[in-house]
Amino acid sequence: MSKTVSVSPDQLAADREFLKQHEADARRLGEKRIVRHSRQARWTHGITIIACILLCISGLFVFVPALGQAAGADTVFAIRMSHRVIGAVFVLVPLISAIAAPKGVAHIFKNLFAKWNSDDKKWMLLFFPYLFMAKWIHMPDQDEVKSGQRFADGMLWLAGALMGVTGVLLVIGSSVTSLGNAYGVILWLHDLGFLLIAVFGLAHIFLGAGIFQPYRGTHRLMFGDGTVSEADALYHWGHWARKELESGQKVIRK
Image (cartoon, rainbow, N blue to C red; front, side, top):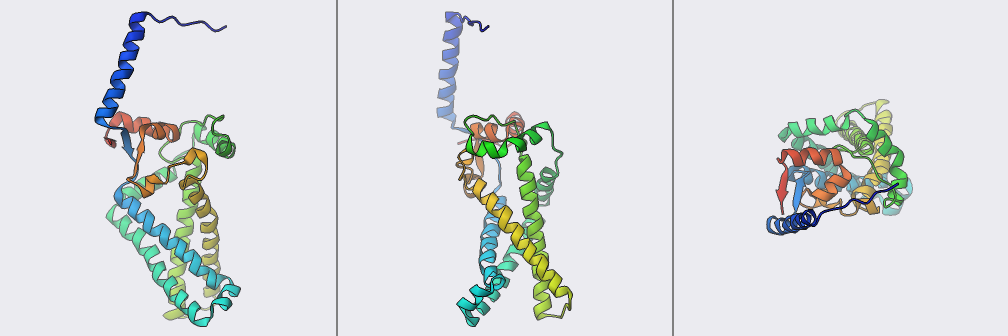
């Protein structure tokens, strides 16, 4: 049986004064935000994702014979050459960024291979219903990278590495030296990497672009200033947000 909690007039006045002062401080100091992605991470992500999309489009003209026939031999040749140039950007930009910030790469992989806890498992079980019924489903707190995101991002890293390595080998095999029967195997692995990126990349875009209601506005994390509001951080990454708010190192006012 519920009980009514009585509040004295003095306590009620104190509570109202606290809320009034809190709102005044927020207007004066600005909204509290947490830095989630550095400028280097955002630029690396942006250039790589554009290169990846262009590679997928140009690769279709080689992967699908009907498209190549419709475009014509000269156009397909130009597309093949552009595919190699864009492929070099796709490989070199992340490598250069990793060399420039090795601690950042170590931090990424530490998050990807973090051990799952009970909150992670529960989050995965509720994920698909949550996409369509977010108002009625309470998700457990998550760390800096959600459990499902660890798997999806891990597959993207794997597929990207597979595409990069096999792509370099295919260029060597077609212009420098013959790879013999290995060329066909490498080409098959390259195609496999393309399919993996198509599947997990689309899922990444659907969530990152904020198409589903719970993720509206998340595109600003990578294509904005890299910060997230205190409220959104607590909502999406509760464990991580509380740690950052307590340390204050990445907390800013805007």
